[in-house]
Amino acid sequence: MKLTVVRYRTKPEMAEENARLIQAVFQELRAKSPDDVRYLSVRLSDDTFVHLSIAETKDGASPIPRLDAFRSFQSGLKERCTEPPQQTEATIVGNYRMVGEP
Image (tube, rainbow, N blue to C red; front, side):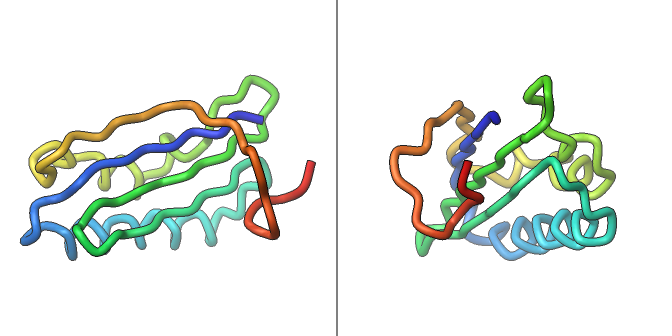
């Protein structure tokens, strides 16, 4: 299992468009229903977005980047941001009903 966290802040005038593009990723995920990934995205009040992705694949590679909607989301992301995306691997320290129990 590989947990990845990505954090960035959008320009205020681009936050709604960014949220719409993220929602399209979730629509495609629901339609394709991959079993080997968990994904959560939140928008903070200052237009910072945080994405948590758990890849449960053998090689730890997430299927999300292969989605058409994700490619659309990534197109122009840097131009939508005031703070560029920062990606890091993470370890779950505590978990209560947020992600599947190991």
